[in-house]
Structures are given as structure tokens and as C-alpha cells.
Length: 251
Image (cartoon, one colour):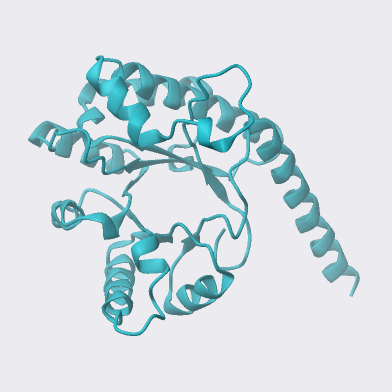
């Protein structure tokens, strides 16, 4: 959601339900473990391709159904960003006829994978950014590595997590406010989007919007949705927007 309370995109989530019928959320295996297992058995590249293929297919569907401005964000490991992956992404997007700025590529920090960024990874990230994609870093509050990425200047999107968004107003944690202000200043000076993740209280959104954060996501807005339900949701949002528009026109 942007500052105007309009839903403008979604994060492509990966979940693994090991049973044919999962009735309990606890039975779902979440990304850090999935990615770690894929890394250990040499299938990380296959996972990356699956995520990219599904994201591009969804972008095609959205465009064909009147949602040509909706953006999707995929999370990848820094070690995955190679010249070969850049070529793979470009090929898929070109064939699909999708504008590159509709695909956001976010580097996620996974402590379970002991691989650091190489010069090749850095150059590939910069190539993606210069090619028109929105390239970002996730979980800015999770570790100092994000500052290393910021110094390299190869991304134009920063996502801050719950360690900051949930603690802005708590006594003794005023530093979080200064961190957010610093990131917002950086974003405005370097054409970089700032997204607040893990929102669980609408009041934080009001506070962060007032400070200048660009985008928001979290359970307080909309819980994770299967693709079909997400498409239905975007259809309803589009109709709500049209109704508001025609209402204003009549007035």
C-alpha cells in the first residue's frame, strides 16, 4: 500500500506445505528453511527460476486483466544474482512483454547460507538496476550487511522490518526514529523507495507515512493470499477506485 492507501503491489511469497492437505499453519515450512534446504542440496537455482517464472506469469495475467501498473517483489539471495540469472530474468520479461519497473528484486538476508556477495554479484545487481528493475535490500534492521550494500549504491529500494516499525514509539528506543529519518533522507536524495514491513498496528503506518515512508505491507493491511484470491482482491480494489472516481465526477 502506498501513502494514499492504494494497493499497488505484492510480495511473491514461497511456502512449502509438505502434506497434501494442511489444516494447521504450523505444518507450513517457511522461506528461511526452504532456502537453506535448497542451498544444501544444490537446488537454489531451481527455486530462483520457479519464483521468477511464477512472478512473470502473474504479471502477465495482471496486465491482461487491467492491472498493468501492479508491481511484484521477489526475494533472492545475493549469491543468486549472477550474469546468468540477469539474462534469465531479462529473457522472461522480454518474452512476456512486461515493463521492467514492475518487477522488484529484493536481496533477502539469510544467516543460514554462509555466502557473501562477490564482485560479480555486486556488478550483476548494478546491471539489474541500470536495466530498469527496482532492486532492493530486505530487512534493513536485521544486520550491518545492509549498510555495506548501501555504500555500494546498487539498489533503489530499502525495506525496514519489525525491529524498527514495532518499536518507534517505545520508551528508550528513540534511535529507531533517527534511523528511519536517515533512510528517508537517503531515499529522497538517491531516488530510493522506503518500505515498512511487518506492520501489525495501523498507528505505525500513520506515524511512518507522516515521516515520509513510501510503501507499507503487513498483516494489518491484508494477510498473505493465494494467487487466485489475490487476483480477486485486486479486481475489487480496481472497482472501488472506479466507483470513487465516478462519484467524485458526479459531485
